[in-house]
Image (cartoon, rainbow, N blue to C red; front, side):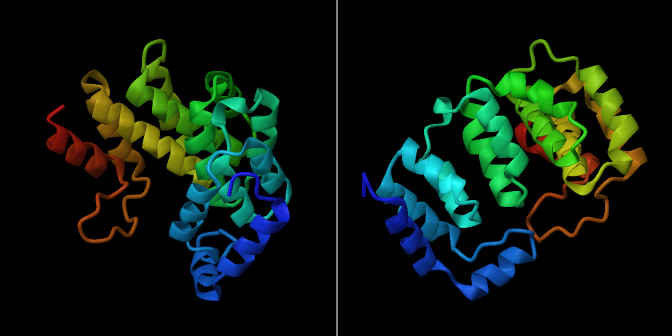
Length: 222
């Protein structure tokens, strides 16, 4: 489907709309009714098409934007373009895919990480923390992990949900990956009790940082 028109692709998305899927997604704040497996299959047929991706994004439709993130060329976006896209990406799945599938692969990721982490919009700030968590795990050189823990300790307890979740992930990642900071990370998690009572399915690891850190260290032998 290389060279497919926007009209053709939007028609395919409309045909994939399922009211039952929409009802489930809307409970999580995602306003679309397309099964993600079918969305990925469509993206595989379309292959990489940067111009189409931009047009899909401009529709403002959530399913179209998710598809755009699957068929785009992550390194082709300019810094300000990604900044604008993130500020428009309010549905959680769009926000998550934009950060993980596109921004993390873009040469402006570090600049955006620094800008977003300090942003007054908590949803934007959560993207900055997600990028920080990526660096904690894969490229910690140059990060002041102690200072990050200071911020988490001071701000995570009262942070809005998405930002709190992102900061908690960073806290856990520091505890998992960096043994010299593990005791402090565990202590912060235990005192703040963020996500302590979060419902967790059988076989899944709790997002409560002390449990998460302990379990991942056990599994990996770090």
